Image (tube, rainbow, N blue to C red; front, side, top):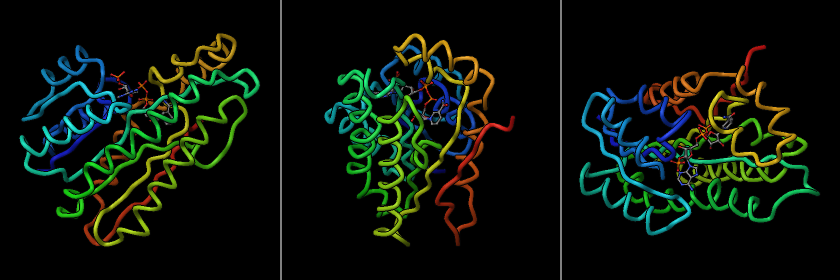
Length: 232
Ligand SMILES: NC(=O)c1ccc[n+]([C@@H]2O[C@H](COP(=O)([O-])OP(=O)(O)OC[C@H]3O[C@@H](n4cnc5c(N)ncnc54)[C@H](OP(=O)(O)O)[C@@H]3O)[C@@H](O)[C@H]2O)c1
């Protein structure tokens, strides 16, 4: 039984992964939407827990990791999934949105990683970071989001090169997935242009299956990245 911390469990890819992983581990479900977390906890088979955690708050992250250590005894798997993208042309970008993407997508991952590393090293654990195709390419109208997802890949690579043989790391890098993700974009024209594309892209469970695949890799191996795009 693995002890798993999952950020962004209240929606989309995180929620789909919680459903896939419920029978193979104990999961601490994290997010800000407590109603969604409570409903998910009720629905899942097995012994899990939930907690409100805004990953931009270091004290929330500390409380969450302390809770996992107290209730589960260790953190074997950290799934850094919480994230968001605001799409805008660079010249029309809103600085508060840029800062918020960095706070959630980069600093949030770093806070959780820093707090979980001692247990992950002790347990030879596994970090799953949710990157994106935007970890590899820079697209128009999403430059800052792409910058944060390039950073996610760099963080994963630093785990790989420095903690080889001690902690496994996998970056899951999806193209468009049909979740609430695109609805965060406040630029109405871009939202209107892109929402149908996302709605007809991959199901969140497709990505959840890839996370399971990485977690179940043969013990003499580690899958460092899965890049997955819609087939259309
Ligand atoms: N959908 C796509 O096309 C796509 C493609 C590539 C990569 N991704 C990545 O996949 C990950 C999951 O996104 P999704 O597509 O599943 O979108 P989603 O349905 O909007 O889910 C985003 C999750 O992140 C959590 N979150 C956002 N801000 C947070 C904060 N400040 N503190 C804690 N949790 C926060 C949300 O929980 P609360 O609102 O409850 O806090 C929610 O559970 C993200 O990292 C995203 O960048 C998505």
